[in-house]
Structure formats: structure tokens, C-alpha cells
Amino acid sequence: MATVLSIDTIVSDPKVRGGKPIIAGTGLRVSDVAAWHTFGGQTAEELAVNFELSLAQVYAALSYYYTHKDEIDQEIRSNTEEANVWLRELKKQGRLITLE
Image (tube, rainbow, N blue to C red; front, side, top):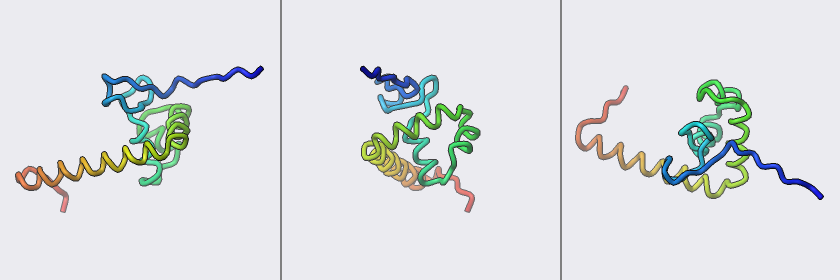
């Protein structure tokens, strides 16, 4: 009989980041890691250095992402839409500082 071994690197707590899956011991969402990897083109090694994570943490986040890809992709889209709303509001208020 096989024993299923769980990896407890990815956790969810309704009191942290709205209950979105995060890397245990951090506030970093799986969706953040997935977005930087998928859209930012960062390798696992680059993510580990840039976010001060172990490779195990990065690979756990990416594994969780690919296991729950549709759900996390929707979260990334939602995050992007929300960020765009805030950027438009700040621009309208004249409080958006850009490098342009």
C-alpha cells in the first residue's frame, strides 16, 4: 500500500492574502511566482534569488501552479484587472508617478 506524502510548503489561510495560496512562512502568493515565471520569463533559480526563497519553495509554488493552472491563471487575470483599475484611479487623481 502506497503512502501519500504531502508537501506542506504551500498553505492557505483566510487571514493572509485573502486565503489565496501562499508559500509557507511568507506572504508571497503562488500567483505572484507563477506570473513572474510565466510572463516575466524568470527561471526557478532567478525566482529563488529575487524573492529570497529556496529552490524547493519555488518548485513547490510552480508545482502547485501547474496543478491548479486554470484557477491561478484566473487569479492572475483578476490581479491584473484590479491593478489597472488602481492605476487609472491614481492617474485620474494626478498621483501616478511614471518614468516616462
